[in-house]
Figure 1: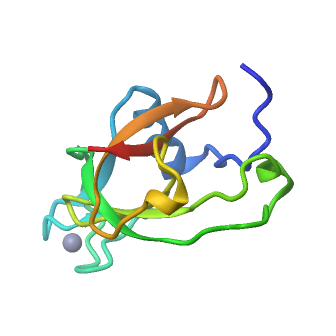
Figure 2: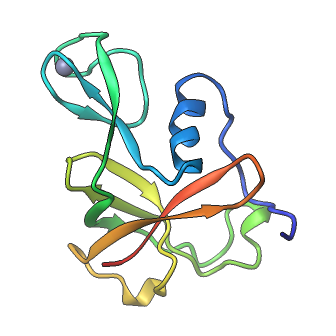
Figure 3: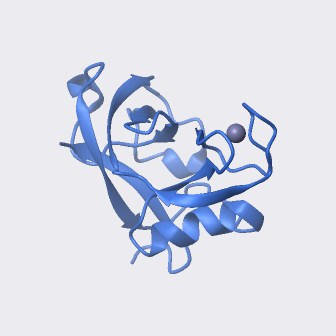
Length: 135
Ligand SMILES: [Zn+2]
């Protein structure tokens, strides 16, 4: 594995738990045990009902492209060889949205509402990122 130069998540607290599931090949989000609302990014309190009772529930991993932008020039040195690249927002079937990256298409191939599904990429021994591919 060559050295990974892009920014990595800091693995502490709820963030560590989220990426821990990814490392096991499972995409899980918090789901409120009071109002059943899904949420992402991880946080202690439900933004809908303020409950602090929740659990990690497994996502279908299926969704659609909600939006994206194209970075023509790298915004970080770690992306020097990647441009042009497209940070993509995927909306999962559960309703949560994830900022991610497509693994199998160029920015010019992206279409709003394109069906996608999760795939996992171990970028370091510690970090596995959820990315998406055409479904
Ligand atoms: Zn709630």
